[in-house]
Length: 61
Image 1 (cartoon, rainbow, N blue to C red):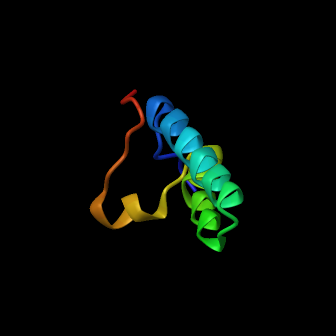
Image 2: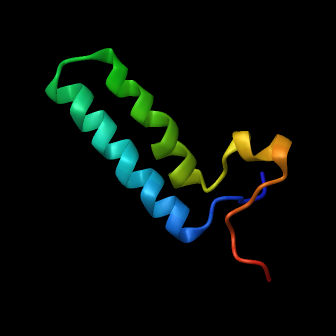
């Protein structure tokens, strides 16, 4: 897996993922687990949804 999530994108995904998980915990809802998607894509720096479109938010070298 080649990294396709850049640094700003990564930070935003991690923050949004944590916020969604926190809201799910606060409201005692299983929907909070949706926060795992942006959290994990931010941690692993890979987003499978970017592949079909050939997108990447990484800086060009």
